[in-house]
Every structure is written in C-alpha cells, then in structure tokens.
Length: 137
Image (tube, rainbow, N blue to C red; front, side, top):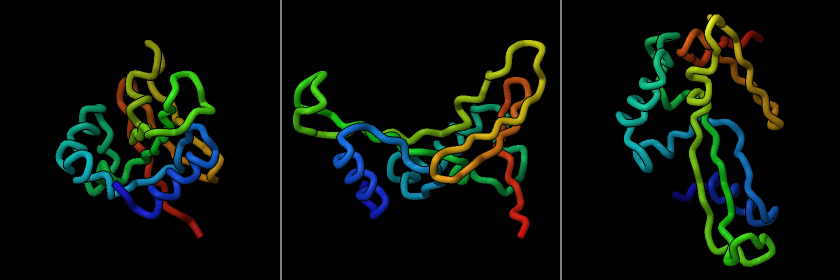
C-alpha cells in the first residue's frame, strides 16, 4: 500500500510522532487493494440511502479520510521507537446514519477541516446522502 500520498502521510506521522487524520479524499487506490469495489459499494448501500442523490454517484467518490496511528515499541511510552503503524480508511457518512433523535426529520450537516475542505450531507431520519454541489465560477 505505497503511493506518494501514503508515503508522505507516513513520513509526517513519523516526524510528528503521533497520529494524524489525512485530508478528505476519494482515493481510488484503496478500492481493489483493501476492499473490492463491489464490497465497498455494498458497504455504503448498507448506510441506507447514501446513493439516492444521483444514479451516477459511486461509493468511491464519497468523502473518506485516512487515520494514521504509530505503534510504539513500549506500551504507553510515546518516546519509545515507532515499530509499526495502524492505518484506517474512514467513511464519514457512516457516522451520520441514525444520528437524529426521534422527532427530528431532516438536517443538513457540513463537515469542515483545517485543509480548507468542506462536505455537505443531507440527513433524513436514519438515512444519509452526500450532497454533490456544483461548482459555480
């Protein structure tokens, strides 16, 4: 699992000596490397209505982030040697399914990060869909 982006993230984690979240991406590299395209589509489909906003939207285009966490030689000692890393690929929409309490039918969620990115979701009942906004010049 080595791309220039992955190598840069791993280097930054090692230099900072602590875990990090990556910028949000729709990284095609993970598909068919870590999970099959079909399983990825099935996973997002299990999040209820994720793809109803457009028939041409693929789960691989949904916002995802990487989480990198160093594994230290000595437990509970972040000054010891880094001997490995834990990498997770996070699908943001998963955390909005069943988000609303009873009696709340619809909200718009905007996720913003320090990488100057923002993503909008439509949460209706127990369903979530990424809102694909057209870029207006």
